[in-house]
Length: 252
Image (cartoon, rainbow, N blue to C red; front, side, top):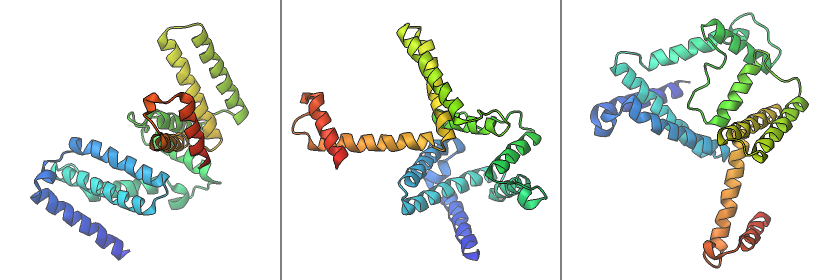
């Protein structure tokens, strides 16, 4: 434990030194760091998807640096410091885990999640969806909203009902396309299809964001194989020629 505390103290010291002595670090604000933090978060997500343990370690360090950076700026503004942030999360964890730090009994993971959402409402949250960030990618946001409303009982009884909803939404989208309804209506119906598919994936314990990203990577790898093995420019190739290389990439 002391080794971990020493490492964190070292990072705090370096952050103080950089903020005081480095022109780039002195210039940074909450706003200027925001996009960089988002980028680092996605780099961590990529490393996790690749199961790259060295990469995960590196990206954790990068994100820790950002958290310490934000805390240092908050301290300069007289608003909060790193101790305030850490104590706040410690207090929140203790309060929201009464089955560990209190006398509440749970029967499993789902009970824990339900208690978590109920405690948030008691703390003054106006909606179970208030904790879902507006800037989340749409697919992740849909999954999170569905999972959160489940905790208060807004949920289908079984996956067959959810699949029936998928088929219903597919039929409505197809009808909208066949009838050439206004673009906004076709877009809405397509969104309904995606939302229902995400819900079905959730019932099957499939993370749709991860599933789609794995397909993205597979597509990228196979198309890059076509580019690397094409005997002429892609613009000069027929679809059949490119598809032959695609099938070759699949076999390899």
